[in-house]
Length: 328
Ligand SMILES: O=C(O)CCC(=O)C(=O)O
Ligand SMILES: [Fe+2]
Image 1 (cartoon, helix red, strand yellow):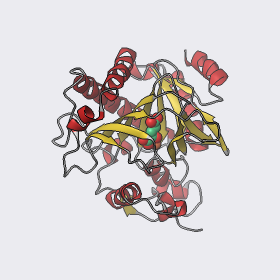
Image 2: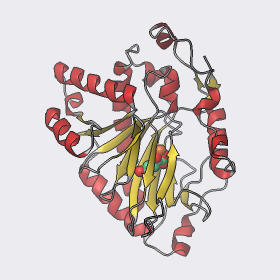
Image 3: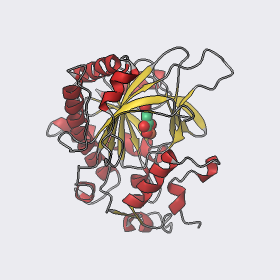
């Protein structure tokens, strides 16, 4: 069945593969599973980006989630600010808006897993909290499936990644609205500056406006929204563990002239006290020495948060994973 999706996707999405995961919900189908593993392995070693369908997140919930968040963001600012962050949350939960001078042009709601004491939700629209909690739980399950598949793609011992990344408390989700792009062609209309995610696996659900772009062989490839699909990108943790076998995708968001853009972004994240370093399998297998020195995830996270709270004046001083790279 996924042959169809691959064909269709290649027409509109310049070879960002769209992969049908339905075979993973049933016993058997070993040939299908094997083919999926080959396609995902290829996408991850080339640029760390692919799309999935039949991932277990109900398409009707995805549509509804975007509708309800649109309603929220249309409220006046005073109303939105009523759900502002709890002071001691590790990341600002509830509603935040990027400062005027920021290069990133969005406002967002952020939550940790349902039940987390850090969470703050708007009261209105009344449906929003439930929709956010439901979709979070579905994303969380789908991420476990993708993690199992990646474990196979990397040829790791069964359940290796599941064991390594078993604490779900620090996963988080952002619900975003981007400002409309300027109607002035001179303006480059960046919505979110180019970056790699620091975590393990990220899902993006974007509305029909689109705007997410991935860097592939030096070219920005727009990810055209397709109904029911989720975008998957790998983060720095997977890149380091695999000693660069799998890539942390470089991506950005462009704004369309005159149109707001909405998205849901789910981050599957390891616990801060986890040690991250290239696994011995990928040093032996590739014959390459370790490309990174090891670090505690929380130290890296702190530096990434500082990039946002105290942006360096020179772009080259923004801390990313190359901070831990070993020059070979
Ligand atoms: O809003 C999006 O589509 C992507 C956001 C993103 O890349 C991020 O928050 O890391
Ligand atoms: Fe990102």
